[in-house]
Amino acid sequence: MTYRRLRVTIALAVGLAVIAAIVVAMPAGAASTAAGTRATAAKGSAALPNGFLPEGIAIGAGPWAFFGSRADGDIFRVNLVTGVGAVISQGPGTPSVGMKVDHRSRLFVAGGTAGNGRVVDTDTGEILVSYQFTMGPSFVNDVVLTPDAAWFTDSMQPVLYKVPLGRAGSLADPGDVEVVPLGGDYVHQPGFNLNGIARTPDGDALLVVQSSTGLLFRVDPSTGEATTVDLGTTLLSNGDGLLVVGRTLYAVQNVLNRVAVVELNKAGTEGEVTGFLTDPRFDIPTTVAAFGNMLYLPNARFTTPPTPTTPYNAVGVEKA
Image (tube, rainbow, N blue to C red; front, side, top):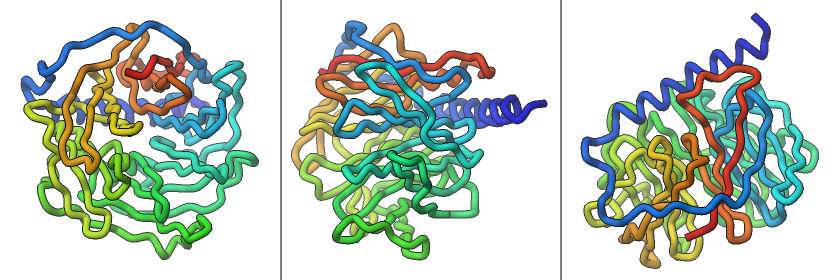
């Protein structure tokens, strides 16, 4: 068996385990009926390498989008205007899932089953620093940047990982990572738990979605205290990547092949699901990033057995 086939086989096992956990954990009748579903016209897409197995996406100030491979951790960069792309950083052989890019051309990457995160120079592909958060069972799933830290979720543990950033954005030493236990309303469940993470509209707190329950939580970053966000009767079932633009939260619901559009109050303590974005090209999208008036989502294709020639792409839809 070649190395390429081996890593695809490993990735298939991880992907199917993840999607099985999410589907099993979905509460009966959890899909919302609070708002209608509206289709979004096809506006664009970005081709990714065959066999790539994408999961995360990050878009900086320019037209460059970055994608991580859950097969081997490669980082692929593509120009959303021209469609030209290339692998800019070879992966460590473990997954690259959620990611964010900062204005210093640094890509913060969640390492999934490896229990770690790393920071990649998007100009050179060099790994600037790696952080081993845990050696126990874990799935470090997503990351968000605040002015003073990078925050990572773990779908298998009731904690957040905080990587402090210096005043000039300097990266913390590995020994400076903080583990922040979650308290308050958060109740850890069997299966897949914390997934996507974003900042509240006022920037004072964090928002995290729990895939197994569909609940959205507002987390006080200084204490880890979690408060359930009041969305009425709506659950964000199979919640995955989160993106906040102004006071609008876009929450990807992966196996439901849609994005919930939530209008939040400034503090992120309550919100209303005003509708859903969907597209016939969706094939289990996982995460979301914005470029201009468009949202781009990688199709993870969890239910499609991967091979070295399996095609993958990211789909662009208009913002709500």
